[in-house]
Image (tube, rainbow, N blue to C red; front, side, top):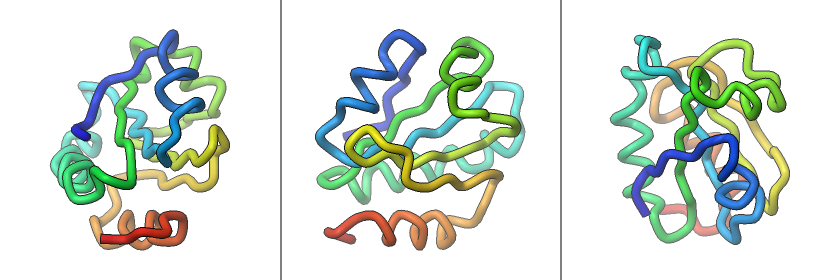
Length: 110
């Protein structure tokens, strides 16, 4: 699985109804830190493609979902499992931090 874009209208189906755990990257094109972590998000999507779905949602174009999940600063990464928010990482954190957070929630680690 590669990183796909979701929008307000597809969020429920793509994220909340996913049979896979989902990492959601809340971002915006003007956000420097968002651009900094984009390659890390892409790499995680590739490394975990068999156990994790990775999606991005542009907070400028999709304010309903951003408001629903109280996104105050970006990048914000939220992990959903079985439609439930299980963890949040805020800011441009190192890859190791993201991997440690994911490892807490994924049974089959790389």
